[in-house]
Amino acid sequence: MKRADTKPQAIVLPPEVRPGQSVELLQELHILTRDGKLNQDSRRKLKQVYHLYQFIEPLLKEVQQDHPGVSLVDHGAGKSYLGFILYDLFFKGLDDGSHIYGIETREELVQKSTELARKLGFPGMSFLNLSVAESTRSNQLPERIDIVTALHACNTATDDAIDFALKKHAKFMVLVPCCQAEVASVLRKNKGKDLGKSALTEIWRHPLHTREFGSQVTNVLRCLQLEAHGYQVNVTELVGWEHSMKNELIIASYKNLPRKRPTERLQEVLATLGLEEMGERFYSEKLAEAETMSAAE
Image (cartoon, rainbow, N blue to C red; front, side, top):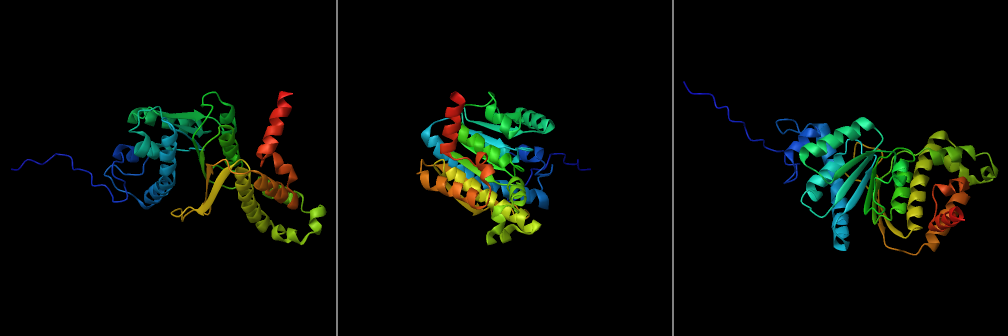
């Protein structure tokens, strides 16, 4: 009688998995099954992260040309799919103090990510149980950060991530904005005021249009704010996220560009739409300097 062959079968990875990617990591993230298979949801999730990696990798390399030790903060990290795959594909081979920080408000996810990083031997990863706004003031993070990411950070968390990046003098920001109801609520509140005499209010007269227009204006204001701080801004569609309505990708690169015109445009849009009270949210560099001086007095 022939003895049964108990030798474990080698896992044949799906073609979607990048060469050099840790199988253990993908299994721990429940992207790969134990026998190395991908279901439809996992395939879509992996495609999302890989597509984002194509945008982020050149930014990481550009930072490396400036100095060793890349620092990246991922806001609203969730289960940290992006952070872990970035670390596995790029940071894992570095020995220069490079670090990824995951910021997440759900303590259980922070604990799980911390345990997984320890298990995988990823020493350059830290996870902090903080809101985006709290992280801006936290002494657990460096004074300067090279790259800031925020993917589907809900409501004003994307704006808080921009504020964080500005205060940390980030060279790059990679943002996939999520819903933000704040601008829409101000549009709705001010609809009946003097602005109501303008035909422009027809754009957001109906509640559905208020929500959609508010979302569009929010991202326009974010881009103007970034430009008013000297960033070059590129807005594109994040191809590969077909299952998501929130498909806008904003990449900001600090180039020390002229601030005057975008600052004027930012103020003009706020005034035209009756959003002056949002000036503190979508602040320009000039306003930030004035507030700093006032606080010092």
